[in-house]
Image (cartoon, rainbow, N blue to C red; front, side, top):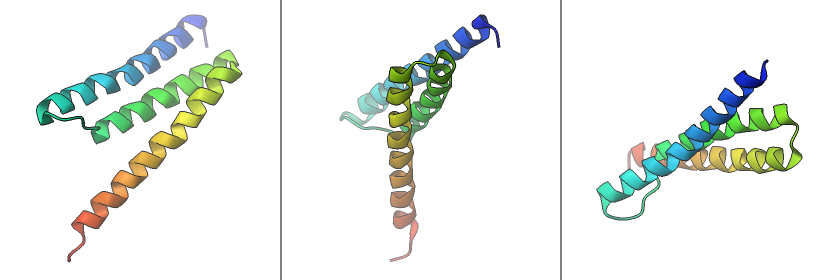
Length: 92
């Protein structure tokens, strides 16, 4: 791929990753307390995957390690949220 395409991928990943803070802020303002909505974790994962791909392309080990580690955290939080949601739906 050309340099321009990879720059677009990198900026798109950064935009997704940054959007999670906007989503978290809006959700917290609505709730009048600090909350982390599920969308935060999905945006973290989408941005993280995109930035991880960009980091691999750049062959930047620091960037690869940082984004790769984050992916496990985002997936784990989504799994915990899914498990919690299932437990709330089970009949008592």
